[in-house]
Image 1 (cartoon, rainbow, N blue to C red):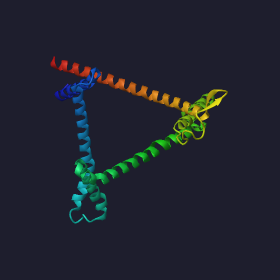
Image 2: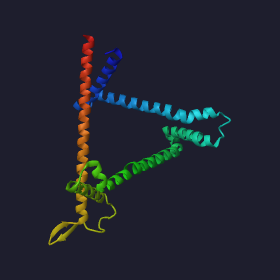
Image 3: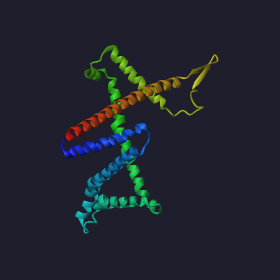
Image 4: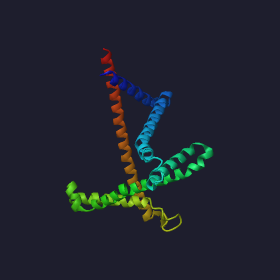
Length: 244
């Protein structure tokens, strides 16, 4: 192990131990490690934004155009206006000038929300809907999974019931006191209504889904923990071998 790898491994091991020290309670070592992590991440993100976005997208086009090209409509739209919005955004730092940066913040949040919603629809909602529709087609699924007969019918039924009851659980169009009552009284006994039963089934599917996700997260965390412990052990053994 050369000197550079030895130093890098030692620093990484120390930081890992500082983070793991949170297991015995909040302490200055853990806070220092978190501050270093947040500071390095923020600095790296800022450097990437400057080098990959601001300089090639704003600074270089304006410098290449020069004073004579500042009146170009294309440069105004793609360079001058974004630069002005960036400068206005810096005014949010001071309370006395914060209101002047509101327009930049509004555009930033609005465009970001539009991108997120559009990405969720085209990247998640539509593919999941099409995937659910294809899962009901035995001609398509049989070629992928080889399922047939009763097994396929059970799987399709579980998927269909889970999807519909989960959607019923998030149904908010009926207000309290309108439409169907949560319970019907029959011979002095409270009998749940159909919507209440469907929502209860959907709640069960949601609970199972969250349980599986939580179990996966815990398993992934344990794998990462084991990897870091192994890394610390390898670093310690490497240091001992280098000293010896």
